[in-house]
Image (cartoon, rainbow over all chains, first blue to last red; front, top):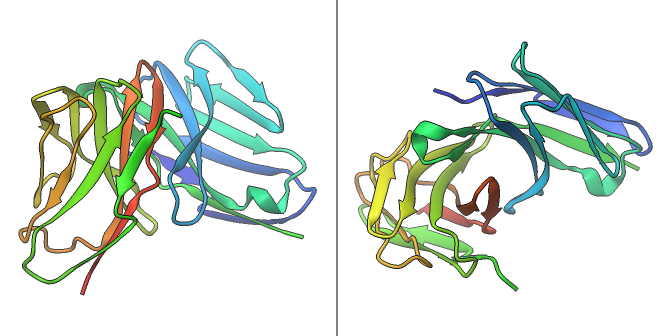
Length: 112
Length: 110
């Protein structure tokens, strides 16, 4: 399987705290993407980082990429209750029609 | 607004029945994908199609079938050969590296 791994599997924090989740992948990549999924819903694209980028910001999100370690991290600063969701990293598998290959996700719970 | 529509939102199937999940997009995307999601398993690729009248098996295609007769439509049939079909099914489409997901269909075997 080409599936990657997220760490931790579950994370519980208080509102206002930062949340960091990590992702490891197996193959060389062109880019890596992060998605959010609210319970029982579809996936929402958060951010894309290209293989030649080391860090990218979008609002309260900060993504880093280390291609030598085949890993990425997603930092959500000043978390809110509305950030409660599952977060997935995904890479493109060119041998499967450029399908996204997902890790198992990190479930984030932010309590007020 | 452009997007992907999956229907129905909830679907119940009796043992031994085939059921078809609908996926329609008006984004003019060439590539479309079906994923299955089980708790704690993330998303796994069932089938994908890069162009009309062509489709390929993904990691877990056994017990599923698809068709791609129109660019806008990529229906997934869950056949009686799929022994454990209860899951959440997501459809997606792609243009370059931009992927759009539907809101999913939750299939339950009763």
